[in-house]
Length: 219
Image 1 (cartoon, rainbow, N blue to C red):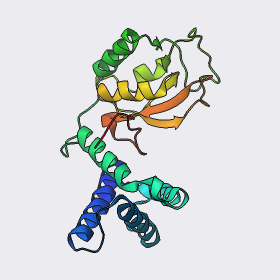
Image 2: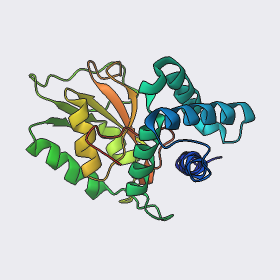
Image 3: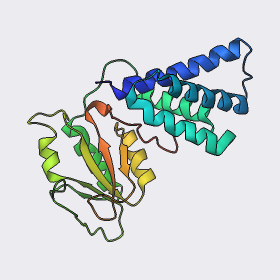
C-alpha cells in the first residue's frame, strides 16, 4: 500500500523541479501567469499518464478542476510551495516522529488555557448522534474510547484519532500545527457530534489525505 505522505511529496517535488528546469531552459517565464499555466498543464498530463500512485489521484483531479475553473486565480505555484514547505516542516528527514499521549494531553491543556471547551469523557464513535453544550465557547471533543484504544496500551499513537471541532476552525488548525499536529478534515460540521466538524490525527502525522494548512503559514 502506498504511503500518501511520501507520494504527495514526490509529486510536489517533481512538479516544482520540472518548473524550475523549464525556467532555466528558457521555456517558461518566471511569472505568476506562466507558472500557473505550466502547473495546470503538468497536473493534467500527470493524470492522463497515471504517473503517480492512486492515493494522490484525488489531489490531482481537484487541482486540475481548480486550474480550469479559477484560471490564474488558482495560483497552483503558491499552493504547491506551501504544501512543500509545510510537509518538510513536519518531515524534515525520512524519520517519522511518533505522536504521544503526553503530546495530546499538553495540546488539550493549551486549548483549555485558550478558552476552549474540551471534552474527553464521553464515548462518541459508534454511539450515534451526540450533542455537547458549550454555551457559545469554541468546542473540541475527543472520543473517550479512542483516548484509550488508539494507544493500544502504550504511549505512542498507533491508530487514527477523530477530533470534533465547533467554532473557530482556523484557530484550531493553527493551534494544532503549533503543537505538532497535522489535522486532516473530514467535514466542516456534519459529523456525529452535532454542529461539530470532524478532523483526523494520524499516527506520526502520516495522514491518508492532504493535511489542513494554517492560513498564516507561508512558504
